[in-house]
Image 1 (cartoon, helix red, strand yellow):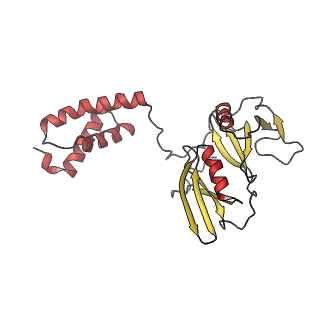
Image 2 (cartoon, rainbow, N blue to C red):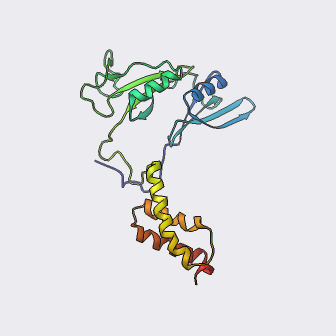
Image 3 (tube, rainbow, N blue to C red):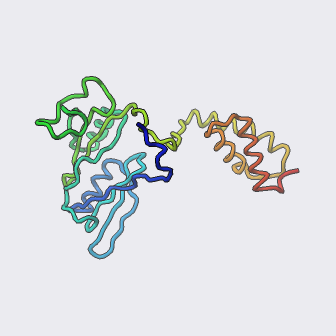
Amino acid sequence: MSSNNVNNSDMKLEVVVFTVADVDRTKAFYETLGWRFDIDLVDGGFRAIQMTPPNSDASIIFGKGVTPNKPGSTHSLVLAVDDLDAVRSDLSDRGVNISEIFHYAGGPFNNAVENPRIAGRDPQGRSYFSFASFEDPDGNLWLLQEIQERLPGRVWDSTPAQAVDVATLATLLRETAEHHDRYEKTHAKHDWWDWYAPYLSARQKGSSPEEAAAAADRHMAEVFPVLSR
């Protein structure tokens, strides 16, 4: 049963924190993976670096003095991927020692059985059931979990819109320009982007071109009333 509507307040996983033995070595490792470097904080014997996996909403923070745990004590951090073969290949090309693809004998993350890992993909090809793993220099273990289709109730209603591909964006911009042309001919001189922004926002939220144009007109009338004739 989905609990999507139980809590109306946002509560997003922001960061995972762990200790490492050599901060610069670990920073170099995650940079090799292609992760984004966010910040490096230093205060006496304390040091914390934040980095973020590609397109992830959650980040990691590692360093010295950030947790009471010993380096290498973090296990089974999970990275969701939609193409396990492609990600394995990319990481291998970057010099990462990554495992072969495997599945769990007792189902995902079940390490309670003897010899829990079985070589090869999940025989039934199910989402969530195929994995690969790698470790950072301290032995912190990462799992790549292939998720091609999420189970019902596993996506929040407020999931951000997906990025628009270049061809679609070009078409949308051309459409915006065509509708803006009418407004530009009947109103005082203005910055085109002030009209484009509300139009594009409305279209991406599902409005028709006519509805989006009306929304852009209303925005301009409210924010720049002097433009109206």
